[in-house]
Length: 87
Image (cartoon, rainbow, N blue to C red; front, side, top):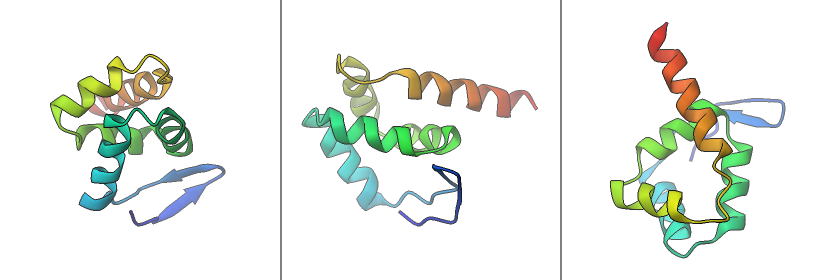
């Protein structure tokens, strides 16, 4: 993952490489909720949307099924993506 810019405590404009996506997917499969929630909390909503879009359908489904997962990040990312598309 390459950090291009940061604003405040949110990292923005990240280039997610295959290795990071693989690590994040592994954390989802192992239900490492602390890693998942902290990663998504630290990212800007547009970067969360990009990360989620790069996950396989199976991995996205598993992420949503994890009860302890803070789904607020997903809702913010969806809203942000919807807003971008409406502009």
